[in-house]
Length: 116
Image (cartoon, rainbow, N blue to C red):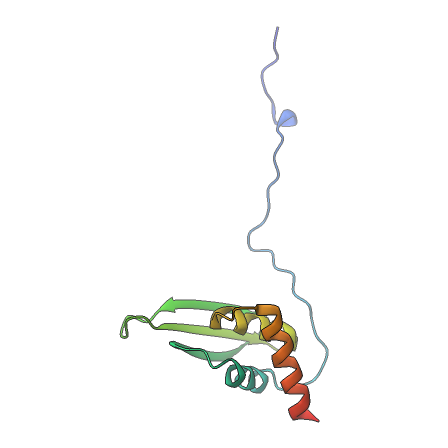
């Protein structure tokens, strides 16, 4: 005779969708200024970007601009512990870079050259 199923027999995993693990960069630099320089390099078309400081985690939101057809609006919250690579990656993604890893490396190299 077959036993009824119990919770001990269940084969599933549950993931917490709110759990975020972020790298905390200890380097001291102006993260918003870096993001502005990265946007100058990327030159995103049909995209308005608002940058702001957050206290806990990187926050990126992109929506269609209802006032202008074909345009998008993005808001990017940057915490004080975000790395330059993390910021560059987020901006390259929302800008629609064809090759995000290449765009990240390019933005980091340009920023290093300007800082030298």
